[in-house]
Length: 167
Image (cartoon, rainbow, N blue to C red):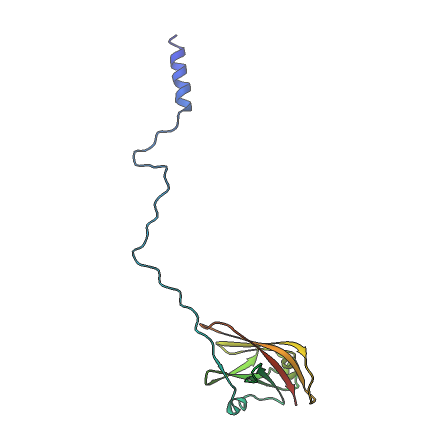
């Protein structure tokens, strides 16, 4: 029987778990919480557009013009472009009382601008999304439209209105 007992001891030793170091634990580590509360995330400031003034509208250059009027008939964007398809149209909006001169993001001149365009400077982007056509009493075009404006540090803005273009 002496042979059986050492064999049994070897079999039991092979099946037993490895010894646990004295400082080890099977429990998940407890997260350490900071005594400093997290800083609140600042909410973006509202973007305020003013009515485009005559002086601001004079800053854009081009043979033909377009204008975005809100549903309350506020003139919020004036654009101008040449018939030259290689040129870029320009536009102006009023950020509060300050005129912001913008350039079309893509070439196409007046024709691209009339279809709805996107204008930008280093901080602000204004895009016109043209909708259904409207009757006009002139040679130009008129469509329902949405003016979308984005600026760094400000909440985006979308305004419904009319996009009118022509001589």
